[in-house]
Image 1 (cartoon, rainbow, N blue to C red):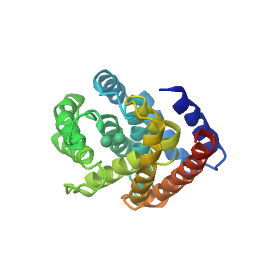
Image 2: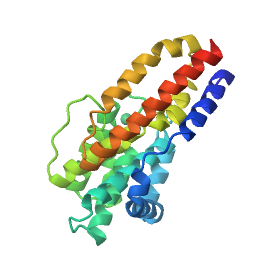
Image 3: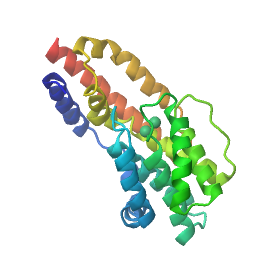
Length: 249
Ligand SMILES: [Fe+2]
Ligand SMILES: [Fe+2]
């Protein structure tokens, strides 16, 4: 990444640090810990993590780090939604493990056109080797196929499958909050030679896209916290735009 964008990224991180974070991780600390603990200790997830690390098309800011964050948050969201529904023990672990698998695999075909559908096609045969039955594999694949915004959402075969699909979508779109300006944009720019004038010309379109995402969250918890992530991202984006205009033009 060129030095101008490195300086702007540092500004973005500084601006983000001035705002209080979205309270999702603090409000659901138990579920965050549960998801993280399972992710780090489950042998199935450990094996799939290694597979994804070796095969993911690591570009555009949607590589392994992004997939891990989505997997962890999708697992947290599933655990939050199951809280109070008497789904616990091995049943809860199974559902959170499925969310982790969906998160790890969702962008495995990021460079391909229609990457969500291509990711679902890739995930099916892989998951059959990880001890999931056909119905579980189908649920994970439908969730992966449904993770792109503003596309037709395929129907899920069960309530559990629909929740998995919604939680994966929301965990992916949580990344379009502050992380968009502290990480993703710069990782995308590092793969493209975009002059600052062009970047600034595209800026309003990017902000408008984020604003549209604000209304697309799907799970009950995602509908509460998703708009907060997006609002925080938009506030950081607005401040950053002012800073770039005053310091670089
Ligand atoms: Fe994606
Ligand atoms: Fe993604």
